[in-house]
Length: 134
Image 1 (tube, rainbow, N blue to C red):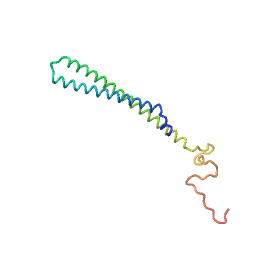
Image 2 (tube, helix red, strand yellow):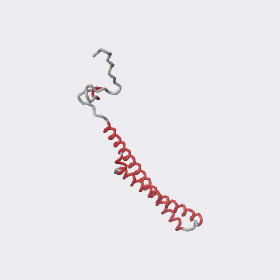
Image 3 (spheres, one colour):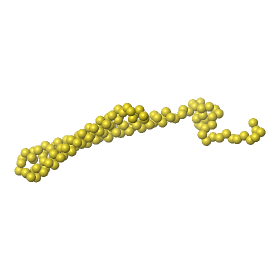
Image 4 (tube, rainbow, N blue to C red):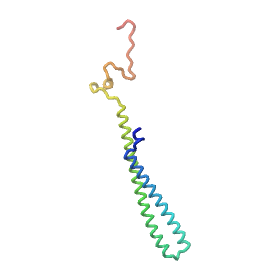
């Protein structure tokens, strides 16, 4: 986990890249939307201007294209985030696996957890010997 903090994984880099693309698409869409609203305002003031109507149609097509690009960028971002989450889960599983103590393959059941034949496992207590018994 510490390594992930200092060196970004390819999955994290992909998420960062996709996020930047999405933000740029969103910014472009918002700018085009603002231009479209200004154009509508101008059409309302001067409805007889044919050029404004042509510009409106063109701007509407641009908005639809930008919306599609923005939605595609968002889908790619979501997919990259899912891949990153899977990568993080894999790292956590590997870390847990490394912490698990190997069992002795010569024994089965609880005895397989012992590293030596006389080892007591957690929760096991040797019975106390009475004085005088050996």
